[in-house]
Length: 395
Image (cartoon, rainbow, N blue to C red):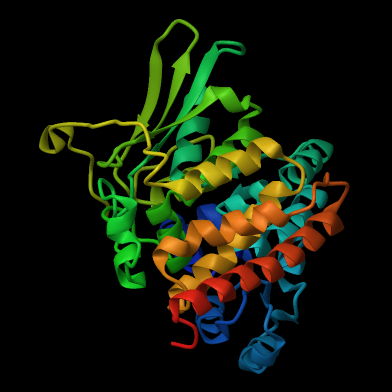
């Protein structure tokens, strides 16, 4: 029987890869729903190719593009709740959350609330609302399949571990395009330089987060919620080759590691076919260790990557602080990509927002939404202050 999936964020970089893999699996996977935020024309093309029962577009101004689908028997949903509608379609077995940023939290909760398994390619859902996501998962007895290469690797290693036999989880990080450079050397780096990742082909926001190592701080928080591991037993190592995607240290000092080429389609396919593995039907490079020759590991330099430390501190503080930190980062990166603030100011905007953030615990989804909105306003103010000082505003 085919696995029936809904892909949220199908027009983004991860969503397109998901559909690329789905196409190679043939009758093993049936696409039931697709959603996008703005790109209605690509969504229309995808719907014509995969023939889902329903599609959703968050930007209702673009819904007119999808009108031909309605005439062909496809349900068309438009508006801010479109992704949630696609996440709760009755026939869906697995919801692939490939949305970017905080926008992934609500549909993730909706999918779990409807008893669906979730393939999670949106770390912000766990960063901002980890407590809510885990509570919803437990209540539904649903599974979460992490699609980040590092967490997919940890999950595969932990699947063969005995309970109580794990000492430490180790996430690896490439170090991004500025590895080995001092902060002052990259303070005025351009968006193009920050997005020039040496290994992975990713979207703009995640590429900048990789350059600051913020992305790895978010992944530590994600691992905390996914694997119920104490903070002091989650570690990070810089590994420039990006061959070892994560490691698990066992109680006796042994290590388990997952190695693969840097290709997001591998964890995507595993999430779609779990617990079985399939031969790859798409062209992908095979891992040749002899040609790589060496694997290097080092600890992150806290002075070089201040955003990494801010993320870890927010995660340990808990409550609403991770949501505040995430929102501040999203705003800061947006301002940087628009050339309104310099690269070297990213950490300062996040730090200023966290310094002013009120303490608070997460009682429900609305608490996270309020914290997110407050943090975006405060981060925008902090960014404007930086822009005024550096005379970058308005460029």
